[in-house]
Amino acid sequence: MRRPIVGVMGSGSAGHADLAEPLGRFLAGAGCHLLTGGGEGVMASVSRAFHDVSPRPGLVLGVLPCRDRDPLCRPKSGYPNLWVEVPIRTHLPLSGADGLNARSRNHVNVLTADIVIALPGGAGTRSEIDLAIRYRRPLIAYLRRSDEIPGLPPEVEWTSSLERIRGFVESKLTP
Image 1 (cartoon, rainbow, N blue to C red):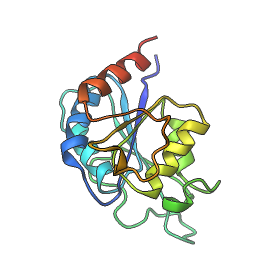
Image 2 (image 1 turned 45 degrees about the horizontal axis):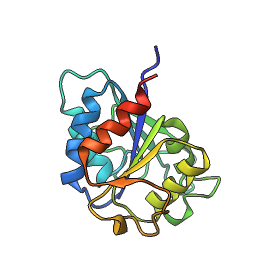
Image 3 (image 1 turned 135 degrees about the vertical axis):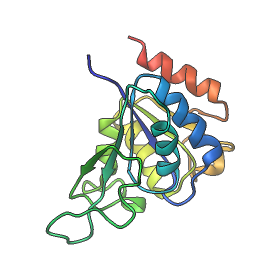
Image 4 (image 1 turned 180 degrees about the vertical axis):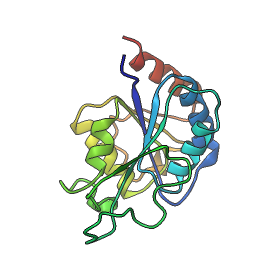
């Protein structure tokens, strides 16, 4: 049986630990793998919390961008964070405002995830939300306020309740 993959998207600079850490601990006990972009900020906070749960069945996956024009495709500085157990190296450097570009690793993040959870973030997070809508991935945003993701589409459900996130994830993971 294939273990489901939950993608958590969010800021690459701010950790938002009050949201990311409880989410990471919950996901570690939910029997899934965690997928992030493998960097700092939310990605590191949720990865650390997931990783620190022991025992847990799932792994921390990180989809890593390569350095610009690096023929060896070495990861950019700051990637992977310390808690990534399965680094997925890509030749795809673009993210942020370029996240919808066909050469963006954001496509890999969203297409690999069975469920997408968005935490506070900027243009890169917003592009992953747009891709989740395009590729029809189950999507929910875990925020304190809807403006924590600029331009959050009105059709995207958002909540500040970890209980609602639990219910959403469990409903999508149950066959």
